[in-house]
Length: 261
Length: 339
Image (tube, rainbow over all chains, first blue to last red; front, side, top):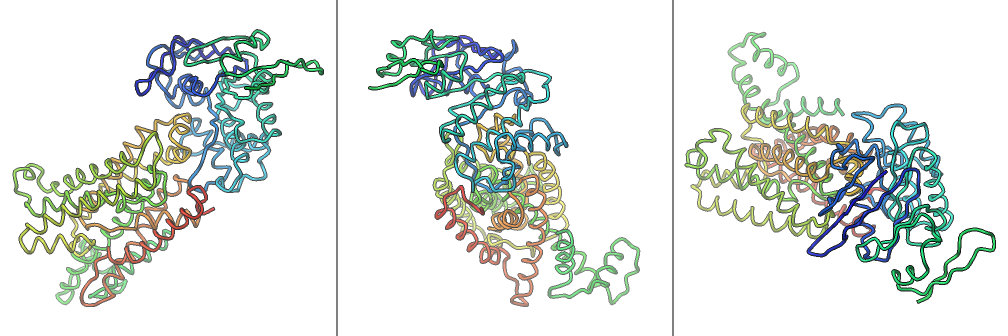
């Protein structure tokens, strides 16, 4: 479990997070929701150990995040950002291999190389491994980054420890096909000793994939729910400043939301 | 590339006002170690070769290696292919620090306790201050702004250039001429003492740099991503700036400012093979040594019996390359380099 306890965060004299407590439990697809400027990215950066909170604590399986050596933490958790640009030309394979950096010293083992190949296969980019990263489209670049973080916390052959994957609005540059592809891969990781913590903007996508929800509003946790049905329409309307209509899915799935302002 | 280095070194040792055949070189080296007797007719040639030519060849190769590696490191730190020690003020800062010692002599109150290390130490202080200033000004929120970087480089170079100019103005005549000449880079003053200093600085800094190849690769993704991969970007950048400044300062203190080598070397290697820093760092040391040896040969033979400052040759070759990279960067956006 990744535990964020009573976290405050201030930057440039502004209060970004105010006493946020969230427990991202193991084996779950945890979703952080909230409007722009609610503090979602700051919460994610604090949970990953990148930012130090002004107050409060972050624990990984009961151990303070600050007690981990940087490389040790990197073997436990990976982060997929919205968009990663590269100024220099580097073949796709070399970018994915970076995910294995925390695992080897001078040169990669045969296992590291094999993991890189398998990660590229998983995202459907195996045939592009020699292409230079900057020449790929935005969506293809995002798939390579997914392969890189998969390689970093490779979980498919029974890892020794539990792993955490953080997703920061990972589908922003993807078309519908690859959004589903990416989130299905993430969801599949739950069966392999892995926990997901994701910031998602599309509420329908969030409610479909998630199984624990943390709604942030103006730096505070507005609601925490294990079931989308426990989140009231009124709360969504207030937090996101929209009028929400909840339609039941004739196919028997989750409710479908429509929004107007 | 090793073969090219050996060829360049031998050629560089042989060609010049005195020409030495490979056999003569071997004989003189043998004489240096006392394996071969020195015949009276050989004394002049032996002295020229061992005391003038050979240190010069070594110094040129070492300086080339320093500047090549430095360009690679700085491009990694600034995440941009146009950065090199000449551009970011490192060389100019070192020159200012060093000319301070040249003008006030090694006996002033400030420099006396430092002894013969006064020149490299002051050069380091100047170079470090200049580099940090340019880095701080051009970076905000973990991102480097290319235009601010260029402008900050121009400003710092101008200030350091003015400082050096002022020092040479108040200096007595022979010192002043030295500063001017040495501002363009020269190997004519090479001696074994200089070779020793640059060799030690280079060996240490190179060994440390080699450990950061992976981290520099990760830094290509940006500071946050590099941190997620288990590196500590802020510490990494500070350490590499120090390492880089030490070797550039020592080399500059010995040979003066030689621009554009640090730009051209990594650029050629990126085009030929890869931008992977675990490859670039050692390869740029080798190619830098080769290129500088060749440039030094040209400097010696182009207008005999006079010598051209090497900085002039590197600028003539390097400046067009610099403009070309800049043009491509503007046309295609920074992301589509060499692609």
